[in-house]
Length: 114
Length: 118
Image (cartoon, rainbow over all chains, first blue to last red; front, side):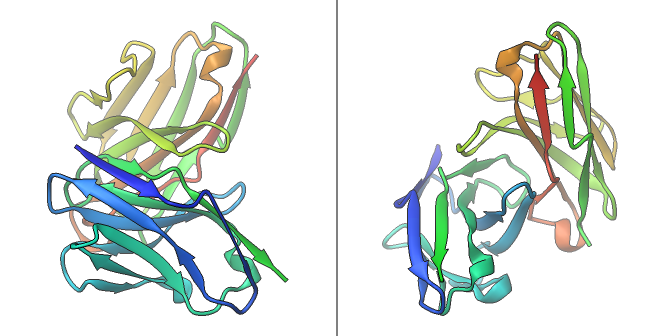
């Protein structure tokens, strides 16, 4: 069995300040982990993925995440928030590399204050 | 690369009718396609997994006779909601993964189809 816990349902930061979205996972397998972003009325977009290569993963739009097995965490960070980053973010775990259905976290709504 | 489309983007239907939603991979061969459902302000829930040419595998609690899935080619999967009822109103999202290129080891999502059953 596998599960994902996103620790914050809402995160609010000021534009230009760092972003931290927290995610913990549970998996009986060596997991693949992903972060997806969903803007209002738009489809899900892949930000980045971890598939047992480098533990620090760089994604699009300046986001990155670090896989920490000892902490079972995969937190998403960005050094400087932009207004366009306001969206819903999902931490996702997969049993196999893309060949299995994904288990989604409940999502974190990121709010950017001007 | 790795673009997935869905059609229609939204649909309104009467209770008791059937609705078909298409999911297409536009620039890669999707050996596996997935169907998810998302209720307002909630996360995505996997409904079923389909492999090209095989019967779909449904998640626990999903009625296979109500949500018919066909994956007849490497670029097209369809979800048919049969005898739709108001409680079937939701946002349906498909994803696809392939065996090569960007689509390997990653699922790419369609833009979703919003279904409203009156």
